[in-house]
Structure formats: C-alpha cells, structure tokens
Length: 403
Image 1 (cartoon, rainbow, N blue to C red):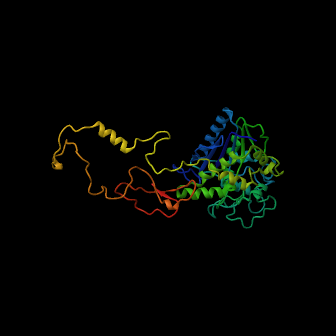
Image 2: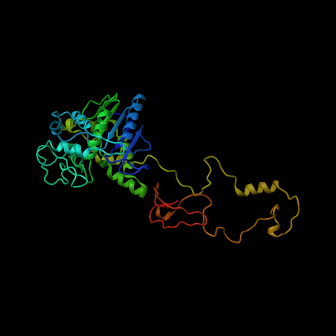
Image 3: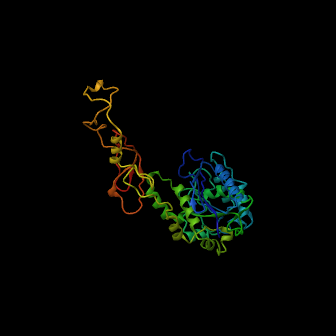
C-alpha cells in the first residue's frame, strides 16, 4: 500500500493553546514524498479541522494519495457501541457522540457531561472515570477503584498488542486519551463525509485517495526521547513526535505497510486498530534515521564556494605596491592635527580595543574537546557574547554551544 503524503495529528481535548507554539496542544506532522515538512501548530480544534479539510481537498485534487492519522482511539472495546447505540457499528457511535458534544472556540466543552450521560446507562460505577475534582459530575468516579469491567472490557485488543498505557475510559490524570476520543470522534465523523475519504479498518481503503487511521506515538518513544535530549530545553515533545512518526510511516516499504494494515483480528472491525501496533522496533528504527547530514565544518569563516579562491594576501599586496607610488613627502605631526592626512606607514595599537578576546565575525563558541567523531548535534545555550561584553553565564559540560 503506497501513499504520497503522510500526516500525523497530535490531538488535544484541552482549551485553546497559547499564541506561541507549545506542548499539550494540537500539532500536525506532514511528510510528503518521504520528506518532512515543517510541523503545523493549531491553537484550537476548529482551526485544526479547517486545516485538515483543506489538506484533504488539496491532496485529493492534486492526485496525491494521503494517509491521515490521529493519536486517539477510533473505537471503544467490543460491546460498547451496541450498548450505547443499539448497533455494533462504530460509525453509529461516532454520530451519537457528535450530536451531543459541544465545543466552543475557546476550547470549553461538555465532554464530562457526555461521559456522565453514558455512565448512567450502565449498572454500577463507570465505565468512564477521572475528573478535575471530586465534587463536579457526580456520575463520574474520581478514581477507577471499584469499577468492574465485566460487561465491557477496559482495554481494546490493539491496546494490549501495542502495550498502550491509557484506557479509553480514563478522562483525567496523565496519561489519558479518554477526553481526546470524545472531542476527536465528532471531528472524524465530519471528515469521513468528505469526497474520497475512507476509514481504516472499518472500510475498504485499497483504492481510497484519503485514508483516516489510528496511530500511537508511544510506538517510537525511544527515538523521540533521543531527539529531545539532543535538542535540550527548547524542544517541544508533541512537535518532535508528529515529525518523527510521519517520517517513520513514510519510510515504511509499501509491502510492509500493507502487511500492517491487513490480516487484523476480528475485534478490529468494531474496536479499530493502531497501525504498527506490533512493530515498535521497526518504527523506532525508521524514526531514528537522520535525513539531513550537516556539512563538514571548516576552520575558515571566510571560505569561498568550491572552485573559487581568494587572492593570497602577499600577492594582493605585491600588486598594490607595484601599482602605487608616493605623490608627496612625509612629515611627523600631532594626531590632533592629522585630519585629512594619509598615513605614510602602518599605525600600531598599543593594546587591544575592546580589551577582551573576541571573534572577527558572528559565530558560535564550543568546546572542541567535548565533540567526537562524525556529525555532531550541538544544542544551543541561550545567551550572547558581544565584543567587550562576555557571556554572562556558564556553558555546561558536554556537546553544547553558546551563540
């Protein structure tokens, strides 16, 4: 199975994100023709949905096939859809939730009220649990203790296969995806109605121009952790997750991706499935490959392009001296009276000004002894060292540099 464009969406059930890109918001990672694009930051779910609608239409109209993936479950454990809607059809559950979820532009929503309504249809506690405080939404237990998942399993088959740590029914306390599902399925219900869109694994997708599917960034956690350690404090986890996972999926051989999307257990027809649920090592390896190798550093900040050379200093001076001749005599006068005169010989400064070590051009300083063989990644230490104004701080040991 082949796709021209891979998109990974890190969804959020929270309120509107800050103006500047930040964590715990909505991020879109895009890899087109195997090359990662700049991740897209969306402050609200409405903004993200509009962006995704435009992306679906533009990729389809351009004749590019797109795999559009999301980091929340597309379905609940077996039996849940029938209990809520009377049908085992997951799309019926999507529509049922979509008619009840209210989502304001500032991010305020009624997901806890909807979960409370669902809990009321079950005997005993749950299945939804977890909330910001113990007083509100009395129909939702604050903790999971006492909930018996006998009528409905707590976890899906793909959650067990991928060793995912969070339950579909957990609405609060990290790690949680319960809120993301309730705020994400209504959006999926609208997207699937756009021309050319099919949903895996609920519908045939072999010839679909646009395929919606479920993924889990936890599958490539080792690669993400390594990348975050390289970038340092300035890194945003969500941004790196979507970028690396979109690259990993784009680098999958088509036959391997087909293998991951075919031959699923029967539970997937109702519960959905995570692409690559049983292939953590492979996806982590593909996410760890660096596609860009930085050029080798040269000990010459004035290096010319290949094939172009500077005129050697001695040669240039010889040419100048040969072309010049004095037009008047010389005399020694006070500096204060030298305005308009031309120096007859080089002036030598008695001391450096500013009286401190500095570079001739803008650049970066780093401890060469801290580097090793091969390409190096040197996360920046915030700060500035200007002429006469040294860096006011300490560059920590290791492969880091100060600008």
